[in-house]
Amino acid sequence: MLLHSGILKVTVLTSDGAESLLAIRIGGDLVGEMSALNDLPRSATVAACTPSVYSVIHRQQLHTFLERQPGAALALAGMVADRLRWANQFRVEFTAYSAKVRIARVLVKMALAYGRRTPTGLEIGFELTQSELASLCGAAEVTVQKALRDFRHNGAIITGYRTVTVVDLDALQEAAELRGNL
Image (cartoon, rainbow, N blue to C red):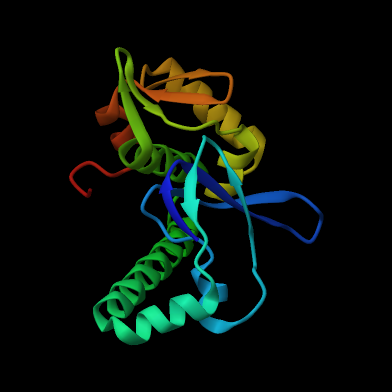
């Protein structure tokens, strides 16, 4: 599927039946490319966070297109490599950084990638529950609650019902140990 506009959440059910947020996809992204490429069943579920416009590309259509357009095949391979690199980086961060640093890193990345400028700061442009943030960061929900409270107290963010607005990006980047590393 090619997402023309909108924001999607990619989730998977864990062995204990809980939903875990794997990724966020925005307009211009491909979704479901792994199943289309290797002919295996889908490994995740996709839900729209905002009104979305998309095109369904059937497996055979994609294969025919990629055979005729080697540049597109290389671009798709690059996209898959970027996603693998992100997953590898997440694994490294999971062991190298505390949960609070991981939470700050995810908030910075989401604000920069999906944030929309408001009078108060960069509002992450989709609803995000604390449970979803916890699953993205590999942290307990109570840990996310404490970190968000600390970030609010320090003036880095404002939170509302399922919303986060980054008020002080520099302070959040410092908490994320990203100063000068983006």
